[in-house]
Image (tube, rainbow over all chains, first blue to last red; front, side):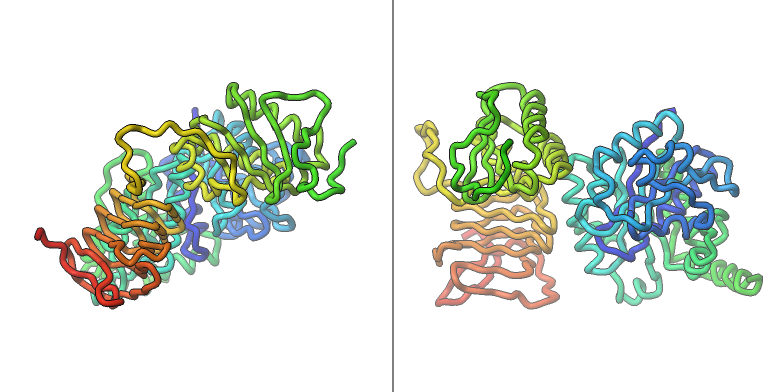
Length: 267
Length: 242
C-alpha cells in the first residue's frame, strides 16, 4: 500500500474545504479504501466536528510532531466505516507549531499504512497553507461560483503551480442551479474559462449538507442527497474512474422534485 | 561568540566563523544579510549554509536574507524548500539574485525579489552581436494568475492569459496573446508612445505612462484590440491589419 496524499485547499475561507474533505474521505472509505484525514488547520480545527469525532480526541497533530505521542495514538478511528481515521489539529496552538518538513515526514510515515491521506488546509496563503501543500501528491482546490472565491482560487492555483505541485484540480461547491439558470450566478463554464484546470466535481447547494454537518454525519455516508452523490462521484473520479457529471438541469425536473418531496416528507 | 549587537551595515565584509568557507560568503548589507554561494553542488552548499546558520544561531535569528546564486539554475521546488528550511530557522529569505534568467523567473514566481536596491558591481555580460539597443523584452509563456506581478524595464510578451489580480508593469509595450483581464501599466517611465495589445481586451485597469483607463464594465467585445494614447487619452480600438 502506498498512499496518495491529497490536499484540499481554497485560499478563501468558508467555501467548504472542511466539508469537502470530510465527504471525500467518507466516500473513499466507503469504496472501501483505508483513509487517514489530517486536519492542518491548527488553532481553528473543524474537521473533527464535521466528522462527528470531536469527543474522542486525546492526542493531536502537534502532539505527534512534538513527540508526546506515537502517530498511532493520535489516529481516531471512525466506527461507522471500516477504515477511516482522523488526526485532529491542536486547538490551543497556531500554524507555526508545525513546519512543512514535519508534514512531509508525517505523511511519509503513514504512506505504507493507508490508500489515501487527505489533508484539510486552512484558508490563506501563509504557513498553514504551505504546511498542507508540502506533502501533497494531488491538490484539489475548492471554490464557489462567486467572483471573490474564484479570484482566490486563481491565486492559490498559481501558488500550487509555483511549488510544482500542479496541476491542481477543481471542485465547484455550492452551485445553486436556480440562480445559474436565471443567469445570476457564474456557471461552471465561466469559472473554468478563467481557471483553466481540470474540473473533478460540481456540488449543488443542498440543505442536507448544513443539517449533516451540524450532526457530524457527512452527506456522503449515504448517496441519498444530491450533494452526497456528487461527493461520491468525486471520490470515484479521484480513483481514475470516468463518471459522467450529474446533470444538474435534470435534477430540477419532475423526478427531482418528486424525490425532494419524499425526502422532506420522510425527514 | 558572536551576537547581533551591532547594525549589520557596520559589519560589511564580515565573515562569521573561524573556519572560512570559501564557497559561502556572508556579509551585512543595508537590507539585511547577503549570502553569496560560489561554485559547488547545490545540495552540499545548502547543507553547509544551514549548518553555519545553526552554529551561529543568535547571529542569524530573525534576519532578512538575500541569496546570490551566481549562474546556477534553480527550480521552484529547490528554492521553495530552502525558503521553508530557512523560515524554520526564523530567517526570512526575501531575494534571490542570479545571472540566470530561469532562476530569476523562478524567484519572481515565488514572490521573491531579484534585485537588491543597492546597485551590485557591474556584471560582465557578453553582448551578443545581434542584440538591438532598446529592444529588451521578456517572453512569458504561461497564464499569469492572480497575485503574479511582472515588472521590467523592457517590453513584455505574454503567450497565455492575464487573469484578474495579476499585474504587468513595463517601461515599454505589452503584447498579450490571450485574454487580458488583469492590470497592465505600459510605458511606466512616462513613454506615451507605448501600446498594449491583447486578443481579448477586458482589463481590470489599464495605464499608459501617467494616463489611466478603467474600461466599461461588462464589455462583451471579443477580438483583438490595441490600446494607445491619442490626444492625452487612452483609447482602445480593434486591431485590424492596416
